[in-house]
Amino acid sequence: MKKFDLIIVGGGRAINLAINAANRGKKVAVVEKSALGGTCPNRGCVPSKLLIGHANVIRTIEESDKHFISATIDKIDTRKIFDTNNKFISFIGNYIEDNVPKGVKIFKGEGKFASDKEILINEETITADKIVISTGSRPRRIIHKNAWSSDDIFPLRGDVPKSVTIVGAGFIGVELANFFDAIGVKTTLISISSEVLEREDFDIRTIFKQEFTKKVDVKFETKINEIDYNGEKFKLHLETSQNEKYIHETEVLIDATGRMPNTDALNLENTSIKVNAFGYIERNEFCETNAKGVYTVGDVSSKYTLQHAATYEVKYLEELFYGSQKKPFSFKYMAHSVFSDPEIASVGITEEEARAQNLEYVTSFTDWSYSAKAMSTRLDYPRTKFIVNPKTYEILGCHLIGPESSSIIHQVLSVMQIDNDIRHLSDMLYIHPALNEGIMIGAKEIIKNIKSS
Ligand SMILES: Cc1cc2nc3c(=O)[nH]c(=O)nc-3n(C[C@H](O)[C@H](O)[C@H](O)COP(=O)(O)OP(=O)(O)OC[C@H]3O[C@@H](n4cnc5c(N)ncnc54)[C@H](O)[C@@H]3O)c2cc1C
Image (tube, rainbow, N blue to C red; front, side, top):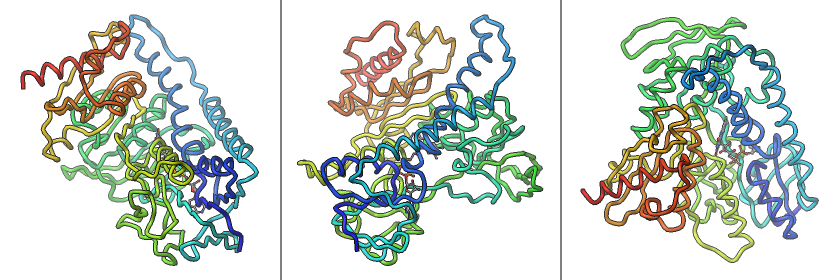
């Protein structure tokens, strides 16, 4: 049996750990059944975010009237958009493969556990002192066998469909819906509830809903009773919460109803590794599973199924294995963005969560119009929401909706990470009149609100 210092099962984000361990002279094996790099560069964050640039330009032209400019779009060369996106996917796949150092042995295939410390791969059994399970997650694919999931969209193939219906109103659903709608595909989003992005803070998601539904047709409180597919079109038998029944036809159906962990094929029954009721691997505060020396990171076990969460966890394991710090793992604050139209960014907790946790808090909810740069966008919806502990001035949550929110939020994240006190954000110097003044106004407002509370 071949013995390694480290085996990584699932070469997504954890490929970085393999590379860095090999660069430290460790003998490393990576077991990967598909493309190295995993979901993010091949069929997730990166190809989906590359589409945003096209969608943003289209939206800007569509809204040029707001700037007293009449403009129309002559042609959208979707073939070129698709080809450019696909070129990136094949480039990145080869780039990762070509840059794996010699000290990393790649086993192509599906890894399974023979015991706590033995991995069976293509009829060979390998072992290591340390094993990391980082097999990620995959779309649940529950609505229809011919429906696409985000995995089937990238690489983008064939002709652009005339109509697309997306089921699921989470971040993947609203990002894809914005793109398809922008390039001129008749786009429908089906939400089982009365909300889109229901985990966002109420004030932010309310504005998102108002703006998003100006463009995308969203069918709220709607369930699908039955789906027929004739090889060309889907017929969805829909029913609203008011018991209204009707048929909705669509060329392409996308299932964005959620993801599930890749644990079912690992033969974990041969080990002492435990999974929770949803199939995610259980781990302790050192990211170690129930089996000693077997660790887990990323979507397959994390509280947050985000690439930057996986990156942070992978960095933690590298420090735990080869560095001097042996501290328990924790995310100090988690941030995320929704790269749709409008764009949203958030760090910390929502007001609903603060209320549910019985925390003492004060809020502010301010618009960005004080900033001339924000005014120049001629958008009236951008807002900042702060949730702050009035005794300590600690920022519990910050939520933004507006252009470049995903970048601006890093200012708040930095303060929270270093010395979490809202007063830094109200006292510091701001470049006038940058969009970040939207943070300054919110910070000053909440300090006023705290003083008067
Ligand atoms: C459409 C979409 C958009 C997204 N956008 C964002 C975004 O904007 N920002 C963000 O932070 N996150 C985003 N995400 C989430 C992000 O992609 C994931 O959180 C991240 O890729 C998780 O990394 P991972 O290493 O845990 O898993 P993965 O990257 O999925 O890697 C797991 C790897 O394990 C392999 N594998 C599975 N089982 C086995 C086995 N038994 N043997 C061998 N190999 C196996 C898989 O083939 C895969 O390569 C998006 C996801 C999707 C689907």
